[in-house]
Structure formats: C-alpha cells, structure tokens
Length: 447
Image 1 (cartoon, rainbow, N blue to C red):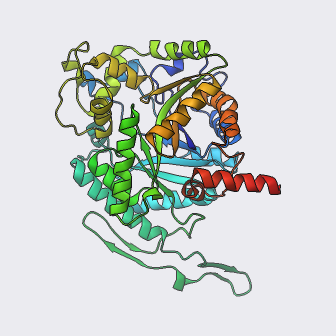
Image 2 (cartoon, rainbow, N blue to C red):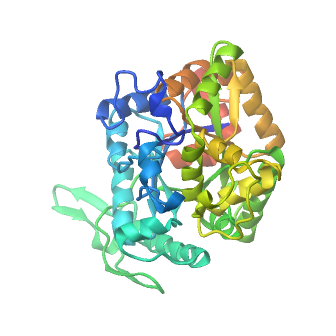
Image 3 (cartoon, rainbow, N blue to C red):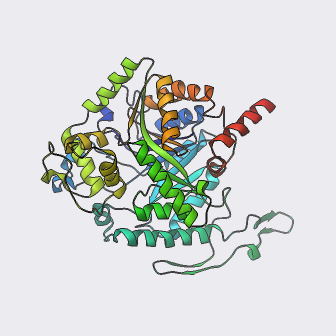
C-alpha cells in the first residue's frame, strides 16, 4: 500500500485542538525549520512515499458570519505558506516525496509552472502538485476577486494545467549542453517558443527553467464531485479520497477508474489514497485513551466552524442536536457533502458529524500495531484503492508512533517495501504497490 502523511504549515492542521495534547510539539515549534526537518526524517525512516501539505488562503468566517470561533479554537489556523518547507525537508532527506497544494484561482500559470519546475530540480524529482480550484468565497475576497461557479472553476483549471504542461515540456531533456569548449550552454533549437492563447490564459515567450528530473511534477487531486472525478480521471496521477464506508470507497474508485478509461487512460493510471486517522499504541486500551483525548478536545462550536467552512454554509442556523439538515447544493467542497450523505446514517445529529470532521475528518483506525495493520489491510481489500493518506493528530509524536510501530508490521506482511526502490516520486506512484515491493526486495537481495 502507498502511504502519505497529511500535514499543513499550521499549529492545528486537521485535528482541532491537537496543539493542546501533551504529546504535541514536545520541544519543537511548527513554525521552525527544526520541526520540519524532524518530520521529513521521520517520514523517510518509515519509507513513507510522500508528505502531503494542504493549504488554504483564509481564516474561516462562515460560521456565524465571523472568524472569531476559527481563531478562538485554532480551526486550521494560523496557516503559513507550505512551499518554503519543501527545500528545508528535501535538504535532510534523499527519497521521500513532497506534494503541496496550490490553487488555480489566483496565481498566474507561468508563476506556478516556474515554481514547481524549480522545486523539482531542488528535490531531484520528488515534488508533486495537489491542484485545487478553491471553493471558499472568503479566499476570493482575500485576493479581491470573485470565484467562478463550480464547473467553470474546473474548465479554467484544465486550461491552467494545459499551459503549465506546455511550459514544462518546452525544454527538451537534452537542451542544456554546458559545453565549456564551445561556450554553448543551451541549444536554442531544443527550447520551444511558447505562443499559448486560451479562453482564460495566454503566454508568449520561452520558459525560464530547463527540463526538470520528472519533466513535470506529479499531479494530485482531491475532487470528489462528478466534475472533480472527471477532472481527476483526465489529469490526475494521485487522488485523495475521503469515505467512511467500504461501499463508498468502492463507488469512488469505480467512478475515478471509469473517468480515466473515458479519457483514454489505463484504469490504474490514477492511484487512489484514502484519508484515515491512525491512532496506535502498544496496547488497545492506551490507543482508545488517545482517541478519547482527541475527541474531548473538539467542542461542538469548533466542529461546526470547520464544517461550515468546508460546505460554505453557516450551520449556526440549524439545531446541532437534530439530524444533518437539507442544505441543498453547496459552493463549498462537494466531496465532504457526499461523504455526509453517503456514509452517515440519516438520523446522525449535526453535532456528531461536525465533531467527527474536526477530530480528523477521516475514519479513525485505532489499536495496537497489529490491529491498525489489520484494519488498513481490510479496508483496501474490501474498499479498493492503492493506499492511505495518514491524517495526523498529535504532531510530531503520532508520526513517530506510526513509523516505528505500524510500518514494521506492514513490512512483515509484505504490504510495504523495505526501502525506496525508485528515485522520483512519479516512478514510485506509477509503479504500483506490488511492483514497488518486488523491486525493493530484489534491490535488497542484490545489496
């Protein structure tokens, strides 16, 4: 199974109140390089495929029309820029990948293409782009521009990506000569001139960054709506899904595979990772105590604050003790609405759903190392997909625990390779879990 750690450059990434847990940030600060160096080394020690960095550009103010509760409970805030973290983490590692989030809504495609090409050089081919279209109206206000409707955002994103790909492909892999005798650094005949004119974007001239180790960054995506799944099927190489039932997992995988085939791609060209919250300890009792501490940290108000922002609906208007309301459509993250309607019972109280999302968003996988491995293995066997994105909850302790306790158990079962078998992130993801394992096993025998 492929594995990723889910993080953001924040005091409270995905589990509200985690900064209060006694196991969080022991001797480390999330806003210092030393913390991120530790995170990267921990991931590499466990042979984790990639660190995934989420991001958004605003402090949520959907709940009660105010950002007060967001700030009061540190609901995914404060949030710093994740891009500068990648060189810091790449410097102390050799193999683990880095996927970071960047929206197509605000920044010019040329800037994005140049940034990711530069990062791909600095990481020697270990970078990926989690492409998002941005649904939060507050983010649009932060940048002083309105957001398009849902389907227009995806059409715009497709053109945005096409321009980036045109720029990345404009330098031939052998364009750089660096011939000291002739004094010729690059062959102009192998560097295409860009003349891109689309509905939303245009670009003329030559790209400034030579062909990078991967050529293009790995493209990741998390769209769960019909339009989002179609976009992923056409363009993504890695998709992050969030479902609370194996039935929902199977349906999501089938939809993405169908869209990949419709786009003329192989069905397994898109790898699917599931969001889960692993809570592990030496004994089940201790793991359950950790889980309860995570839940106790989440107030109803904090949960409603987060869920309101995700759905772009002010849930303060509804009774938290009543079942989840009929909110109709949403301009927010439709995948979260699909998760609620498909995976939760119709009579589940709004407060329960809100607190669940704020306690990590994904389903909790709790127990001893063997029990956690059992659950992960069972989820893949019954639900399909290719692996998991591990939603963190007490940083960086939970990463150390999973790396040191669960990864060895997965390796004993042949579910994880003993090391890294491929140099670039794309090679590792595209090879597929079983082939990755066999390649690593062969390399270990040769060594």
